[in-house]
Amino acid sequence: MFTGLIREIATVVSFVGSTLTIKSSYKPKIGDSIAINGACLTVIKTSSDTFSVELSPESQKHLAIQNYKNQVHIEPAMMMGDRFEGHVVQGHVDAIGTIKEIKNNGNSFDIFISVDKKSIPFIVPKGSITIDGVSLTVNDVGSESFRLTIIPYTMKETLFKNYTKGSKVNIETDMFARYVSHIFSHKKNSLTWDEVDSITAQF
Image 1 (cartoon, rainbow, N blue to C red):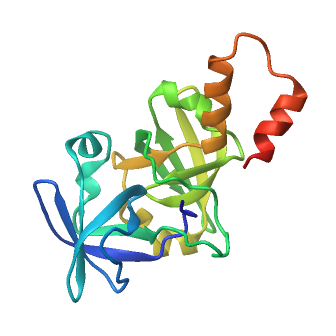
Image 2 (cartoon, rainbow, N blue to C red; image 1 turned 120 degrees about the vertical axis):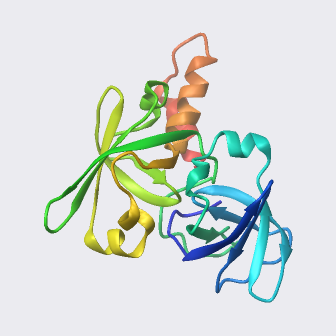
């Protein structure tokens, strides 16, 4: 489990075959889970100043793999007892989006991202979404795109500063929306409000 609060912008040393090697100040242990650009991966090797993770062909197929070079966002998995400050993030990327426009409003930036329309039902206005591991709030949702607004600090301290029109990004949609949709799609009768309360109470 993650929060979507980036721990560090780390440097990619190499990406050969299925092995991605990262240089960072954070020192994970072998077997640790760590989100890299929002995808939960397992550490398979460490050295004095680097660590390596493995991306299976399935993972590479479903990630904006072109972003796994130069610099990447990293966030270690939460530990029991950690303070929860962001959103509930699983590290399960379920869509790739394309940045359509970045609009500088002076004291904020509007980011417009297009996505496959099958993901739109899981993107909720004023709900949470994770973009390349960064936990953000959705402002507006259209038929095939959505809008985020981020503050200058977030733009400066994340890789959003490098993104341009056409950039691909990993997207993890709202976990609660996915769970509720799955339950509805496999239930013949309508949910009662008591059942809805019971579902939400589990999170």
